[in-house]
Length: 241
Image (cartoon, rainbow, N blue to C red; front, side, top):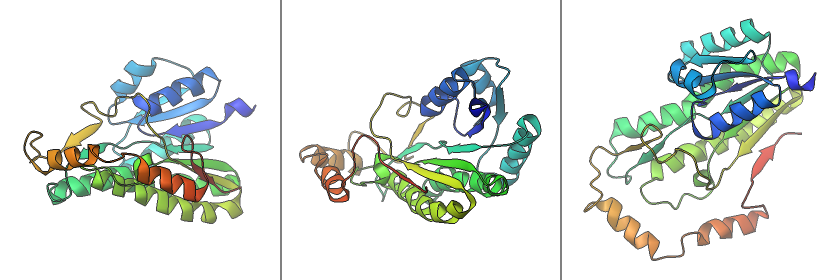
């Protein structure tokens, strides 16, 4: 049955990932979901015969390999990978420490690469499958003050996804890059976003940049890029057919 495809979704305990997992289960799909804590997934989704919650540190390549093996042992295959895990990093470029910037790349970029590294060979062997990489509108236009490093991680996701699409197409595997716009999730709450350790929101570079930014037309450059590429601002994707 078509609905018996197995989806592997990262960052699934809240926000877009959680909404997706619940909808997939409602439609009869089999779902492997990862989060930093298994309990968070169990609390959010509950028990379901088609649901396998896994606690995975996506920055640990060995842990990701183990999760992929567990998924295949449990369901027999993986058909769709959704690289959704990530978090926002607030702080002007000059304010972020080396550790803060690297950590954001470790999760948002290298975490996705780890998942692809271990799941793509399964999809190639099956000669079918689909990889969805969730970027951000901030990976399409980066003019968001205090989100420079976060935007850079999403530009990186966009870049490697375009190459990945060409690499996987000959094997019958589709690749889609998703640029979500604004919608209500827990993205701006604790656990989904981190502030620079030196950022003081009342007096530092961040507030000066923010004040300057709000005096300009906030979406002018985004609209310009969308217009030049002749795409929809609501849903932007790149897929290998």
